[in-house]
Image (cartoon, rainbow, N blue to C red; front, side, top):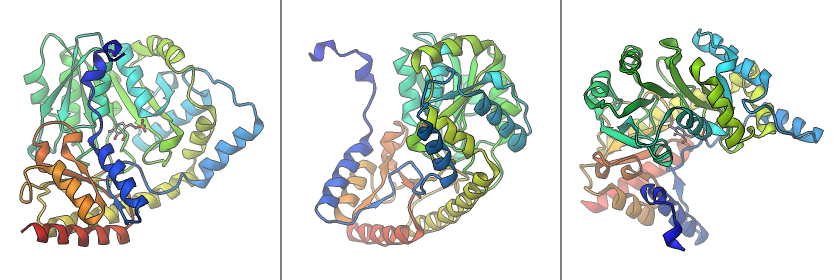
Length: 389
Ligand SMILES: Cc1ncc(COP(=O)(O)O)c(C=O)c1O
């Protein structure tokens, strides 16, 4: 049977953190207390306004397909959100409601990437995005980045690595796993470079709501010739509802529509009604409180990790991750994460889930748990490090 497996399945690596999660579950089943800092989703529940809107729709029983691109009123409301939050005007016809940012990226690549073409992206980066490129028989060309560029791709790197076979470049800001943001002028330069080279620019803006200093700037502020990927998962607290959106250049509307019809038919209808409420002012007020809580947690965890001796050259501005250099303690961050879980019941994600560049020297800590729990996690981490000396 194995012989029938598609070759592309061999190119896609599993998440190493799943092994940790599996072990964490076993330890919990044995009664051990595990503090989860490996998880990439908010610990807050979905806001009640969203739940009410979704269930109201479910109760009508008329839970049917919608148009492939999504409910027209939701697409209009997303366009309004861009006017209010970013002062940019987008024609709702360019907005596609999708099953998460994941669905958005599938549509974006499906309509713009040919087999064998390359897409430039940073290493470290969120691994699914490079795996999607492989799924379309493209090549994810990962470029090592470090603190000197805020762990983001630069226009100069894009130019340097561009070949006749390159189709485009992807930037995720704030980034997973580093939480760092690209500066607006750097983003503009990267977009203009890709446009001048005749390629497609993809901007993963899923963590945009979760920034703790300057606001994040959308790629749409600099060009209409970009694919913007976003989601209700993180800032809006709707991970399990599976809903996001994609904004495409005008020339891609028809092709994207065809793909959306064929790939998904439509995004889950109750989730679309829930998302309408997610963009209401009342919900946004609640989400802003949550953002403030994440900012406090970020400061707490950052200070704690620095005090223990982790090297974090840039205090991250967004998302809910800290990507910490642990070279002082180990040359094998994966083993460190496994041993820490076993000895102290703290679960974190090893760098090798995000690429190969210096991955053995990095760990990702997610502050998707309370300050009280993180305080205990830091005590346990300190004990673990002390015992290694
Ligand atoms: C950078 C980034 N992009 C996209 C996604 C996919 O999110 P979803 O499909 O839940 O919207 C994630 C999820 O962790 C992510 O971290």
